Length: 170
Image (cartoon, rainbow, N blue to C red):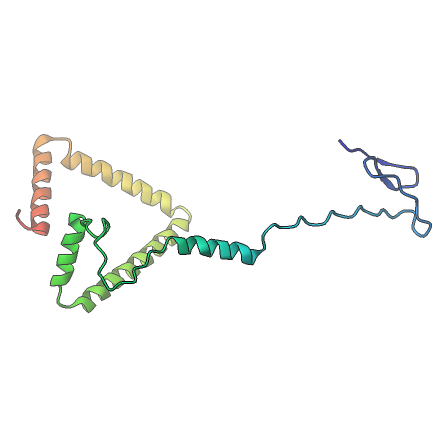
């Protein structure tokens, strides 16, 4: 570990540095040792880029004849069922512009509502009051619909009816 000491002439002396002659012009100044030269790089940036491009070129397969290449495994993979269903539904849509506009309007509304909720959340006391309201409503809903068996059966029937109304009877 190197140690620094201050001599009586108010100059800092580094014990690792080789002894130097004090300059007559400025005895209180300290000259720092020079840095070693930067290490020589074995390859320049252009050479590295060329080597990388050569690696990329090695992975390219070309065919000079006019034959159609055989199908590969990636061409024969099947899409999941939900993707096929979504594609079929999109093909059936006649007014794609209206659907796209509605989707864009929905995204804008979602973005605006998240901004509004975060602004409300920053207000003092409001988040705590809303949390209490939510806890109170949850307790009331559980008492009214979940505790007793007849009320629970009515709730389940309402959920099933709503499910059938949305998705159709299946």
